[in-house]
Length: 208
Image (tube, rainbow, N blue to C red):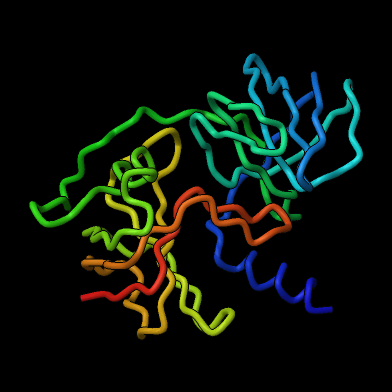
């Protein structure tokens, strides 16, 4: 029951995403994950999902969680140049092909004392464990989940389709649509299980 509750709560913190359909070309099982090389339309790429029984030739459905570049799997001892961490499809999603956005590193919200969302995704190894500040717009708020408020910030920048940064906090969450300075400690590769994986998440956050 606790696992089911955790799954439901985490699903509330994610931005609604579209679902995708692809054919499995290759599979690898390791560390509780299934790594699959898939073909979706004309695109061929790797995805990772929580462990499941799939075989070459299967057609699968999944939702986008986040892209990662140069991801190293310790259990496979393999580095993937680009990999999409994916989750199970929600019933109300609409299928479409993944379209990679053009990378935009700068932001009109950026000031001398702040970093962009794209910069934090691209250079997460540089900032991991450090306190960072982003100036951007609140796009979504989920309150009182696992005793935390979950605030999504965007600033118009984008790195490899990652443009939505999640901040967790015990502070009263700002309202959707407001522009804030969001400050907290950067954590990378945060895995809550059940396919809910954050390449970057900001914890112990404050807003002003």
